[in-house]
Image 1 (spheres, rainbow, N blue to C red):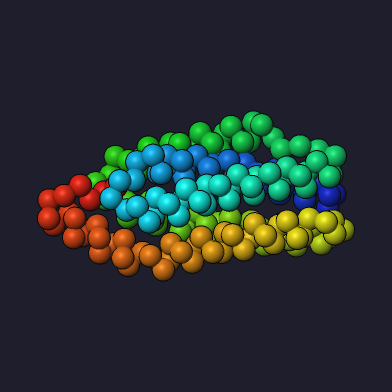
Image 2 (cartoon, rainbow, N blue to C red):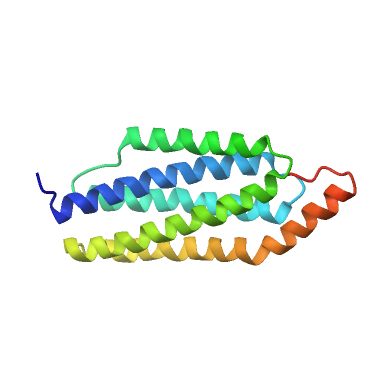
Length: 169
């Protein structure tokens, strides 16, 4: 049975909503643990708030299409986000691994929003692109922040580690 453009679009929106649920869990776990990188903690905290608004935007778009997010998908991806955060917490270089994972995750979200913009256009949804574009720009800004701060984070990690200080978080 072939899917309609609308069905494909709705699936993309529900998947993006679930992806934001995963992002929120990843961010929350990291913010709870970060002690020695206050600017990272604050930027992640702010992005966590953005991610909640992005999830709300996606729910608004879905509502306008007469449907809603998938609670099951949201739960599954939230659990995956928690498990990923726990996995990194066991690593002595947790802050570095989180930086790599966050950078990759932001780019996955960027790709998701760009794809959703294409789907919205194909589905004839003229209201959603403004909301999707806003979320896309927030994801691009976060990815840029991670990239711009990776060198300083790495240097601080090495400095703390070689001085025998708590360095991972």
